[in-house]
Amino acid sequence: MSSKEEKKNSIIENALKLFSKKGFYNTTIPDIAKAMSMSVGNMYNYFKSKEELAKFAIKYSTNILATDLKKINEMDASSKEKIFLFTKKYLENVQKSPEIIEYFLRVYLSNREVFQEGCEGFLCVSEFVTEVMILLDEGAAKKEFRQQDFFPAFAMIMGALGGFAFLSGEQVLDKDIISYSDDVAENIYRALKYEK
Amino acid sequence: MKNNERNKPKIVWLQAITCNGNTHSFLSANVNRLKLFLNSFDLIYHPSLTTDILLDDLLKKDEEIDFLLVEGAISSNKEFFQLSNQTTNEILKKLVLKSKYLIAVGSCASYGGVHKKFEQNNNILGLQEALFEHDTSTLKHPIVNLTGCPVHPEWIFQTLFSLKEYKQIALDEKGRPKEIYSYLAHHGCTRNEYFEWKVEANSFGLKEGCLFYEQGCRGPMTHSNCNKILWNDVNSKTRAGMPCIGCTEFDFPRNNMLETKKNIGIPDEVPLGVSKRAYLSIAGVAKTFKIDRLNEKIIK
Image (cartoon, rainbow over all chains, first blue to last red; front, side):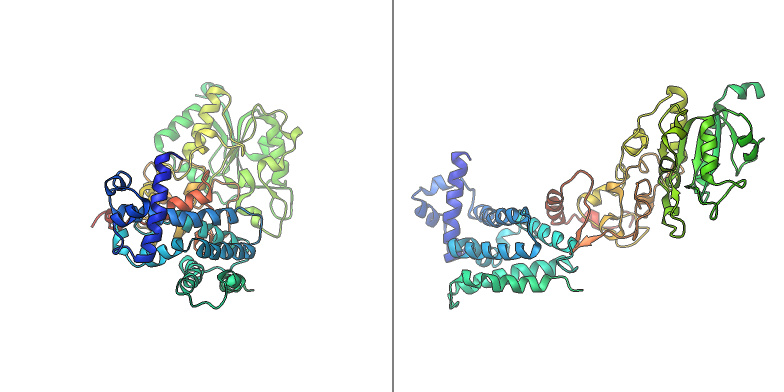
């Protein structure tokens, strides 16, 4: 990675934290520059606008999940095991870097107008959606999952995980988030599993 | 004329277990090409045409055959099918010994085709399967499989003229001429732009939309030049709004030919030579574009 790339990523990481805490509109480029100890002018050498930064940030954050899921998809394991592994990995991400998931829930899903151009449909999250497709396709081909339309199945996984990340963000969970992992995974698996 | 005919390569067209479809297709050839063919070759026997000799004569006589064209599947089970009181297997073996080139005309002759699905007789084979090495030892060339249900007449002409002129022809691993079967039915398909942007046709016969997801089109995984050498010089299945059913492939006819097998909405097979991950990634992105032009009627 070039030093410019590294710097861009570090800006994104800082921006993710601020965006997910304060929201897209309440976070300004000077806020991000301040967190980076950079001049505002220099910030614009890396990103043309706050909107552009927001689009890079969604790609960056979902690619972390995509990389995790790709590794799991490539493992020699049953689809059920893959659901359990991915759920665990996802909840670990929520615990370790909550800003990644919070950004998705609180900025990407809530400020669609920012992402209208250049992030249409799945354009900025396509790597992650592709991995979910691979997971579902393989499970159904092996008859571990039942046949159904893609979107209800996709929403079943992401709804459960996203909802749980939200509960964690609201600090309403009694226990450590990781300890719920198997129960959440079991719910997802039961919604998908093949029935004779 | 008679003298002249003696110098022309002799062709015998044997019909084994067949629906006659390849003969129909052959007789629908472009009239100029058919004339050229008849001027260049001597078709001494075809059961659907008036010829000077009968199959029986051919089997008895010591007549040399240059090109033996076989339409239909082969069986050594006499209970189900016979010609001149012999099985197609016996007749084939006798004729092959007199021939220089053996050409399977159609999917049934190539690999057994639809007849192989007949459960009451498990002895239905394509030419290659039906013949042992010693049966074909006198042939000057490996068996040529002209697959298709039916074969395009031009594929027959092209193969015969190439063999007449150059004595050999490059074949793929399934015995099909590379010149014809290296292409995919997808090449030259007028719906390719719809395929690229994932705009689907929702019923048969439309000019607009791709037939891959909803209609079972096999264009991107079927070796044939149907969209390059057009049928009746004007059209192809996919151009007319009928999905490609993969009739030139080894596994034809498959079950549920008008359906694309999907897992949770994701196609089980993706176009040849593309990994599923790459295909899904590109397809997912392509779907996000809504191109008005491709969602409208071509002719309003």
